Image (cartoon, rainbow, N blue to C red; front, side, top):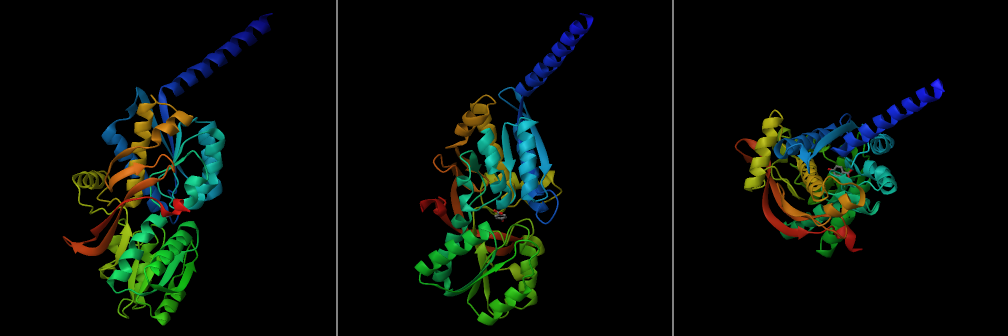
Length: 389
Ligand code: PHB
């Protein structure tokens, strides 16, 4: 009898503890932010975490009366780790939303977790077109490579570039960049004389660049993921490619704002197409860049930071609209959001859950002694061309 009462009271105590925890859960809105914080893609994690924290500092850490809890985890850019962390965040932490995803394979590995648990997953970095099709719970605030590649494929042939060699990282976004650049460039009357693919991790660009030199194209079109541009630029200069008259063009990943200023004069004149430049001329962007630099020892925000900042905006607004909701309701409230981003106007297409935004043509120039991607042309409201298949 004594024992039974004891058991019953401990069971009750345990239950009330669970209830108390559930109650605590009810008063928090949890964002699980999974990023590469170490390893070769750590700059992406650093930029996105900084942007997410800036968004929270500027917009407060409560929504609809709930405390916003940001749980940041390092996946070291290993897909199996990203997936495992996502599972733990959903099952143990009961996050309302998963976010981050610094590389395509990390987003693709985690997509089934979003689907099974009905947890919205906001892709703030990865940019292969097909990612949003991997789960109906995926929403993207970064960009897509087809979006970015088509802009430069239109610009180049009008500017004396007729013969091109492409050089891309050999995985999802690189393959997208190669295909969409090539198709559009051929359509515009250009010629792609060789397509080269370099390993995604620890690439040695030297033998590929030598090959490009021997082929003597008017330009080399490049996609490398954020962070890898510095090594490519260095070897491009060391081989005297620029002096040999071979121009460098690409999507804006190669002249990433995070590393652009350290590239030196070899980067001057490089023309790329992309959705964000730290020098984008708008009052909102000036404010964003200033606040970001102030909070991060002068670090210049790149396009990854903007994907993170806008991702937080999409999450916050959806949380407000659903009073701190989760699952399908939260997802629905993310779709169709339209707002001004530091990149310019931005829209989450409700049908595709993918971002629609301007693509800018930019040229690296020195402004006040620093290198910037100076936007000089705008292609308005670009949808992902990868979705028109
Ligand atoms: C990607 O893995 O999808 C990715 C990473 C870095 C970029 C673009 C795309 O700059």
